[in-house]
Image 1 (cartoon, helix red, strand yellow):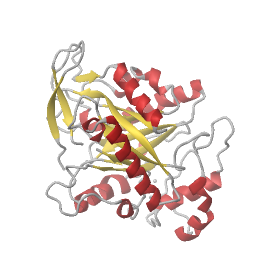
Image 2 (cartoon, one colour):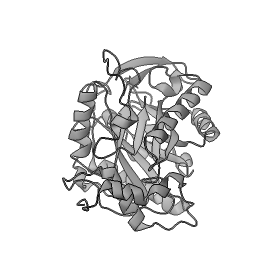
Image 3 (cartoon, one colour):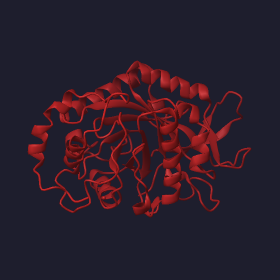
Image 4 (cartoon, helix red, strand yellow):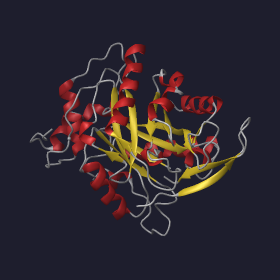
Length: 348
């Protein structure tokens, strides 16, 4: 599957005009019937994300929830068994519905394509659709903002990436507060490393509502220019940033951070069995890539279902999933039939 690339010219204050790279981008299952579990967890629909200071993880409840998300999978892959999260975890108590993009580009995603008011209203509409489709996992909004973008030009640091100005990130955080949304800061590292780039945004990660997204597609290990081939992250790359986030969580007494990792090919993420699951970080592998429903499902099976890490995500492209495709976007009801159920949904 190929990703969609485009170059956009950005009018950055105090920046010269740059070419902007765009991307129209485990544990056996218990022998329990999902219907019975759902009946036992009917009260979930009225549950809020617990406060860190007072909540203690109910491990039996957590196990029921991730079993529901496995959607009766009998392969032994799902649900994934691992460390229980710290108090205040978002997952698996809520389903995150995120809008992706960058304010300097109308073609990078719905976040940036539409004016603020229209965008937030549309996002709230999608959240409502998911809440109608599944009451067991209440949906909450998120703004997923690409804060560091890969570039075709090396730039003055020769890293083939550009960091967005803090004032723009501040704007996204301000918008998110208006609808009580989470914020994800997404990183395309180019020739840099994920921990170095994440560290440049640390003042935001100490905020409890701010989480991290990383894109292996733009991690160029052998000196290639971003966009000329699909990049990769190793288990070591992932473990390094997990350790970084976990340290922030511990030092600042924060609830767990959610780490979203985009994926649509085998080589984008290697040696997945070595990725560490820790109480401070919740890992979502987000099925990226666009195309027909059949193609997207096959990608989900190949790279999400068959290589379980912790939680699953699913990405929808308003334009590229529907271009020359009369069946349109996957609906929430259709996505809920997938094994496992995605707990993170992203619209671009």
